[in-house]
Length: 175
Image (cartoon, rainbow, N blue to C red; front, top):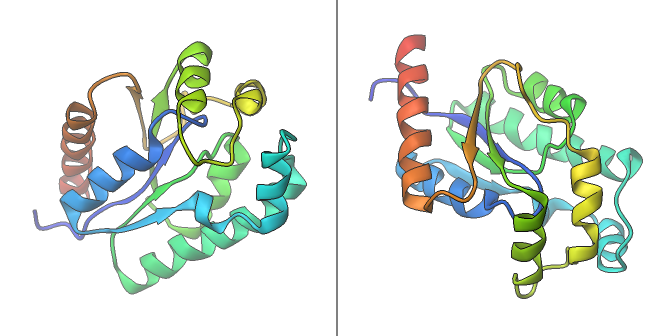
């Protein structure tokens, strides 16, 4: 592939498989993998552990930091794949502004499947009680540019292949 590699955010509600898919795609391209959950301030993590949903104010500094990470990779000309909920259009717009050409993969998942996955995920601070708040905040990226929507229940290997094929086509068209 002659194109430089992707700038991509794998997005969706908690439990949809963002990290797993993001790592797979990043590995394919030799791209940096950015796990957005690792950048939440302690106050946000504590709030979620207590079952209190984050609001826009809680997410503001976190999103600014994530935008900086994407901007830094773009400035260096390095491919980057980020796993980030990016639930609202304005959050995605903020990330797009930091990395022109940024694409998104939306892992679509039902509320019931998300609740089951979160309940069975060991060692994560996001309790199942917050799944409803994720869906309440979610503004699906339908009609937004540079978005691929995939079925989050598909096998991970198939999803990586689907995303890579989509990205390779898009990156080839840019050259």
